[in-house]
Length: 424
Image 1: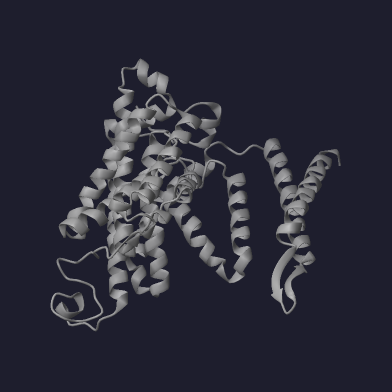
Image 2: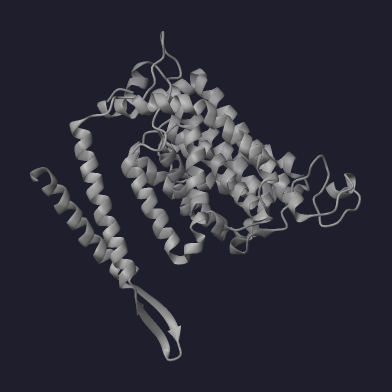
């Protein structure tokens, strides 16, 4: 009885806090009636949420107490997951390849959006997950890539494939430009400066009207082509439908865009994995673990940080160029801080440095709200509660295990158990 007293009290206090929060937010709903604005009470919804908080908090505390009494074997979950991961990755890739044949256009549009965030997550994972540099202004490189492609394509008449590497290189240049002022900053201070950099880019795009058209944005951005074949509503010469003698359909362009972003995302993944196995990738991981030890070993920390910012920004710029050509219109409102926060949440939720974790987190973060769309106003509340539960149960992300890039003899997996002890 004594052991259960503290969890009960804690659950009761949590329920009181939930009552104070949910009573005005969920329990009162405004509407428009014949005599003006009406206020409707929903006590059942509030009681259901408070009861859920009480039961969930009580179960969590009892589970934590049981775990302290009978600790789990370190790395047991990690070993099991690494064994399953050999099949999860290929299975996800197979599903991604055949997805256009399985779903409709609306679901395919969602797939394009998810893959865009997967690519952004893999790009930011280089900076945050591998190099350990907390970047809150990643949306700046996303915006630079989008505007670079739009402006270059409009001024020169070049197509998407010609402008794509240029947009990535310009974003990488801005990544190096950001890296120089923050070479001596770490942790929260680095996050504040990168956040400011992202806002500076957005404000410049908003006010430099002569170049970016200001808040009106840029429209008429050229669409990508398949070996010169355009995706249009007609079947005339030079079109995809006309060349292959197919009936014109808007779905053809969506399928093509899906495979374009899938290819770009897989390229990002391949380059990241290759770089991680190279000396540069091992230096990034060493910098993440201990910058002072890196300096003592003679590692050029300046070059290491700049390369991390440049490579991460390059892939962010590529994703931005794809976003511009997919939308056909861009404006500064598309590149707010919330985009950076979403991508960073994907990296953290998936597990720092985990490529597969980023994919799973992107599906949860971007595709999850769509599953709760029939619940209307309550879907974001349920989605937020699900994320809270996830971070309580897996505080270091969905995948908190990794294999060392290089090891002497038999390589041992690195789990969150080692990290909490200060090893790895």
